[in-house]
Amino acid sequence: TRAWAQMPADPGVTDTEIRIGNTAPYSGPGSAYSTIAKVEAAYFRMVNDNGGVNGRKINFISYDDALSPPKTVEQTRKLVESDEVLALFNTIGTAANLAAQKYLNAKQVPQLLVGGGATHLVDAKKYPWTLGWQPTYYSEAVIYAKHILANHPNAKIAVISQNDDFGKDYLGGLKEGLGDKAKSMIVSEATYEPSDPTVDSQVLKLKASGADVLVNITTPKFAAQAIKKAAEIGWKPTHYLNSVSASVGTVMIPAGPENGVGIFTASYLKDPTDPQFQKGKEWDDWLGWMKKYHPSADVKDVNNVYGYTAAQGLVQVLKQAGDNLTRENIMKQAANLNIKEMGMLLPGVDVKTGPDDFYPIEREQLARFDGKTWVLFGKVYGR
Image (cartoon, rainbow, N blue to C red):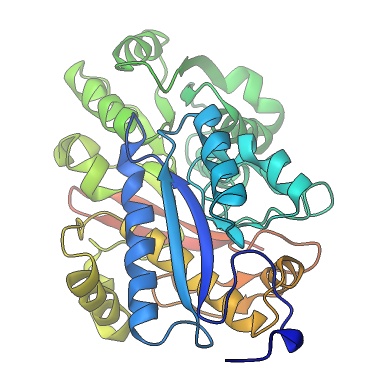
């Protein structure tokens, strides 16, 4: 064994393992996202089978928080105080991350590659222990606004959004992108609670407003409901769907693929249903790994690509940290990422952070659903 004296380490690190904590909605209305944590666990199994990271196995401890913020806090405390994890990784959900953030920053425990894109969740100065992963909801909504202004300058816009920071962030970006036209263009807004059974009444209200553009800011269960309901009542607005619900497997197919034709989204991951990406080494690596390590998962669900890339991001941080596995050095390495390309990210999308830039992925491209897959078009937006 190595001499402990030479190896600085914090809780969660021994000669043989690194303990990493996570919370995810294995139950409740957000359970479609649980596949992300399952995929990450599967990725770490592969890493461990290949000798781990610098000789240490990753011990990934993930608890169900049902996407309920009080539960997230309770499980996060358990991970830090009982399981003594080195860091939290890719906790799923904006509200969940916001709920745990103050505690983790006070304890100086890294909150790494968070599974939420609200802008005020990530602030290098205010929360030096919290680092993002995906593009922000705000910047994504600005892309939709630009597309609406360019292609539908006289649009009457209806918005459905989740009544929390996730919904408000997308809505804020949309209004920012529309600028002084926001007030006149947005004719109707409806919100829902994550605990609501359906969003049928909201969709009826939005149709009644006479809107011809719908901006759909929802999680998978409600996204599928909204697409289905609009089709049932014969409402055919130009439809923008947030990327967090753009899964062909868990949203577009349950909604009825024919009902989703023409919907727009923004993308930064290679969609596993897009034929252009179903070849080459990156695809073979991903599919081969899925079949071996997570055979029960839906190959059509882009969340399985999301979890795979996030896990690769964490492994890169741990590799860079070497034997200096202090929480401080983990944050230093997380803020020093420069990955030019990652197998399952779109061409032109990179992973880059700096001491003042805690947003690793900031580039996205628009795509349109053709009934089978998302067809990319136009330029890559972003930094």
